[in-house]
Length: 155
Image (tube, rainbow, N blue to C red):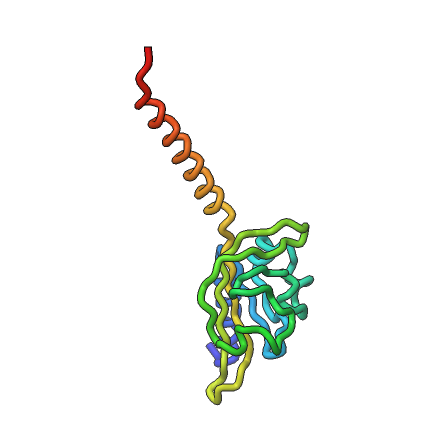
């Protein structure tokens, strides 16, 4: 296998891996423009790769992911100044207008000289987890009500 064929194969293989992930993955270039968008990001956000590529990440209208509302301005984005942002639970706005609870993680990617090449972000949809939490909470409340009544003595 030639070096060029090997390199093309590796890129295709990596692309297939990223598209098969359940988590949304997208990258931004050093200017803050979206440069890749996997199939799970399409499902989670409602935006196709064609719609997202070249746009800024404020397309997602995230609320409170990194401790504050997304500034929509690359110069003020904390991920570029902190290089790695701790995982946070927040909301992103789906294309159709509803909020999607997600866990977001972001890291800066640099070259050997420390020059910023871009950012990679992962987005995990926690809608089902939040629904399960709500059902567990409701179940605990009902269980508490049942046990309160068994202590009542009457005629």
